[in-house]
Amino acid sequence: MMVYETLAGETICPKCNSLKVEYNKEYGFYRCESCGETWAFDKDDPDYDEDDDEYGDSPLMFYGEDPQ
Image (cartoon, rainbow, N blue to C red):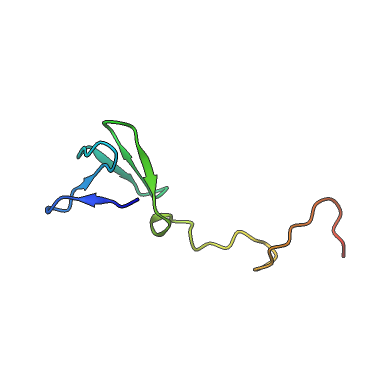
């Protein structure tokens, strides 16, 4: 999904074309006040670059007892 903007740089809702769009800086998403559509982009997510895996880049997850 694209963020549509006017020539003046105002964000337009991709669902209803309303100009009543707010951007939530804390969580990185857009919300249309007219129709309620909510959308976000990875680049706008403040946590996008954080590494949530405590074991580094390992894709493995262990359940139960630790095998070590």
